Image 1 (cartoon, rainbow, N blue to C red):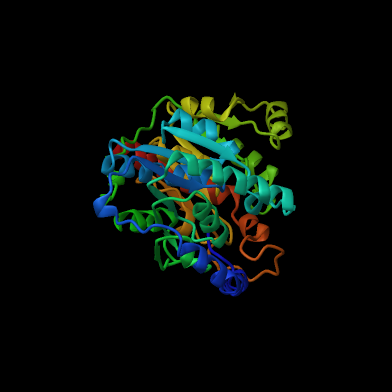
Image 2: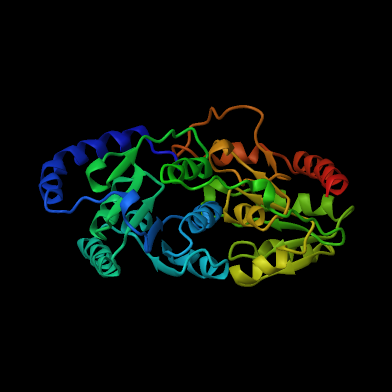
Length: 360
């Protein structure tokens, strides 16, 4: 995530306004030093999308290695809860709908989230961690009453955490998280230890799904790509809410391709035995990368260096020129994504498959 400069400005103004009130409240909180306490309970927050949770999965393993006897509690988006439990990312996983990530601004929603934070206080949290640097995230951490907390102060709110740091917004989300956990003695995870695999008889899996229309590639592009790929490889299409018609159109034209339709957890089991995954800037790419599957990711105007899947055998396909379009979203541009042709993707994928097969 990269914060828009106007949001950072106004968040810091608001942070400065409420500073005196929370500064006084902090006077009544006991001060602790991580060197002199036994960490029994750790809270980690990641309320955003499923892909964000997958990005920090290796980070959670590193925290586990640093504090093997501690109970780790993960707060994540409701849609990511089952996946976090499947991968055993934490001892306890709570799925919530934070009002600032779900665009719900009623007072009642904020009261609910504060009440939930207060209940976490009963768990006697020793260490709390947030990787996003959002003022609202830090406010939530403060309400859980941890002994010690770590986070970034990008949008203000230093007084909400005991240990705050500046964040380089040009860093990939994974690198930001790594830098933060290094502050309390965690060792960096070496992604080379991931066991990469590419099933020779598996499919090239097409995942057209995206949580934002501005990240979507047109259906007729996916259709043309499938036509090109089926001439050389076995192909499978992941059928999501928005791709039922695409699958029917492909079958009508007589293309032989597999179909996957199921839960997110069953999708994990499915792609483990496939050749390669082609996806947009979405959770699918991060999931494939985490499972060790070669991933080809399509990016539009957004900077892949900030959110690309960390994948040794990954491939990023993006427009050749920077975005110059007038767009509705300050970071995403549908026209840029549409400038990537099916023929270009096929050519890149074909060469990449040859590379993968000679190296795996």
